[in-house]
Image 1 (cartoon, rainbow, N blue to C red):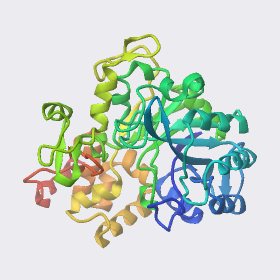
Image 2: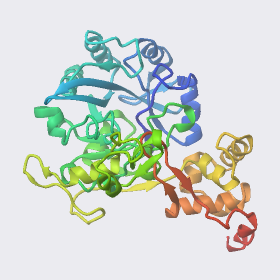
Image 3: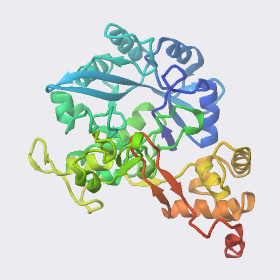
Image 4: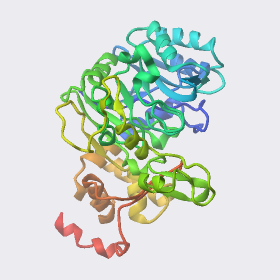
Length: 427
């Protein structure tokens, strides 16, 4: 069964998350996006876990559903661990997946002894990531822990500001239980492939959505049994017949792709950062080292535990299993770019809903719908925009230091719709 899964989101109980992130609304937007399986988010929060237990019912093994709806949920949460290890402060975010309510109850009980789970849907705990993994597996051996947005500078396993240089440094003898990492918005699989240390690690992509419209901005596409074990097995084995591909942001659009200092408006490539000794040329403060630079750094380090060279040229063929990927731009952004309007403008939202009502889900429009149909229902410019995204013909001003990158589908001289009046004849 073909499944599009977004396995990492948040509830309204997490900090800086929309109040609209309720289960009913998540189901409605998952259907709109074309997502079959979505993470519950935040099962450690008592009130949200109460909603999960009262509003969701068991479906296939390890999955749950909202009554009367087809969308499936997988039990998951994200934990923020802040602790000291190796003489340094570490700030690591990890995702926990569980196949059963009973396992969640055991995990929540243990974690409630360590910190206040009511304070935030993504609780901050003074808990070593290794110890967290032990607690998770003690609750149920089918549970899993995946490092979240693995390259984000401030809060991730490989983050430049507070992370580690390897999975082994973080999880010690528990490292063999880490079979996947989440790439995050500012990196894509090709960047991760540069590290031979990750050759046997699966790369998954999820939205980490804080609002309904962000659901599915990254996702995973499977052709496997619709069950918890079916999905986890597809991830672990990287079977190309079962784990088809991931759906990615263009990594330059992520808000930590390049280095920089947002307060001073300084955005640097790794080479420019090196030229300036890692300091902001305007204020002299230390630059936030972004994902691209960090990948470059770790690719040049010896690979633990063999101490062989860890890096390789980007895109160089290797005889290892790799799950392919497709880079997309959310449909709302394509429409906004085509119309020269804001994403939340009335005209853009009306056009977005019209396309979905006429053609199907957002993922169908982005991945499969005939361009001529998109142009017919929208206009030639929107059709051309979708075509360019499918071909990867985009221009992006890279994101940096918490600032999202800016996507451009059309260059100067293409603003006039007359440029596209003859496109219809080509269709």
